[in-house]
Length: 462
Image 1 (cartoon, helix red, strand yellow):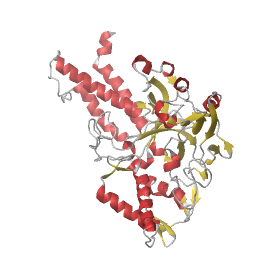
Image 2 (image 1 turned 30 degrees about the vertical axis):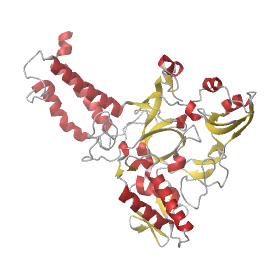
Image 3 (image 1 turned 90 degrees about the vertical axis):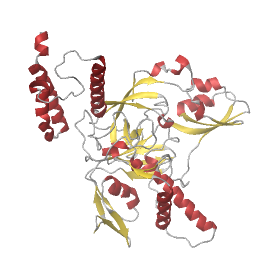
Image 4 (image 1 turned 120 degrees about the vertical axis):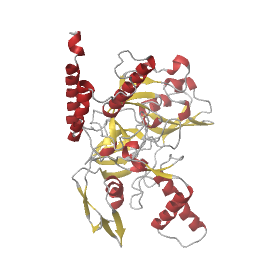
């Protein structure tokens, strides 16, 4: 049996079957041209592919054996990370308390089907920047493949926790990436306009002020672009699917006219007033409220809470009042679609129909802000407005048919989450995978073994 397993034809057959299955899965039959290499590696051995080994020597040195093991491990781990599963860390509180800062997750790429990388020439295990640097790209754009997703086990479902490439991360201010480039640009545009208003100057159009802001950024900051697969990874809950109509009234989401199902542990900011005494810190710790989430000034506290925890906290003897902080209708805020036609904010917006592949929408100057970025940036069309007429790829257009599905992603920590409310839809080609389970969780407010949240290890994500 041992001799059979060591037989070169047996090894070649196994490698051939695995390779053929991968080629069928990927769907690129040009890869069949590589089969002669596979045959030579196992059978004919005309080319010395393992150049780091001495040819004809059965017993290699320890250094060569280490090199051999490292190369195999890197190749195997890269394939697993690219096509099957990848580790991810929760860096911010946007999903608390469903997911906590310090949770280490495995993200399944086969759940929705792995994406073929847009930029396959990249340094192993680095995302967009070389380890130990802040600016050096970890990838080359000599090869830039179009979007292609392999067959997966499932489709995205409403309320799935999804990891995706940040849609507004296509352009960045190097060294100052948060907030995103477009948010910074809008803020600069508003500042320039306000300066003119204060000085009594004749006001220009918003488009003209935006042009001035872009020029300032280009001249004074380092601006860079990133391909889809090298944009930052974000994690949110998919609250609305392609074709869904979403709206929010005082923070309550409605999907297709019905209140969103209770899922996860949704939080909102609360203002809590006491009778002048402090809330017992141990009570807050028992409720798993991180220290850096608590704002405290005298007898007034501000913190994000779920309804259950808010009810529990309100029963403390020294709590005199508790108010959920809601942005009322008409309260201005820099949220999608960033247009005077839509006076929306984080708690009150919509109704908004999420674009769906094959769906045709009417285009006019009012509806254009809802779809402009999808048409231009995500689906690669040349979009322009001249004399109140919309042009797509040089032709006047009053409708548009979408080529991709889009999703609306939101964090469960509703008042502390940068999500679709602030940059719009997530295109299907930005979806990375499904958050599957937590394999480790560390509490930064604790020390030693107390840092480990034992009750969260190997916990499935819902």
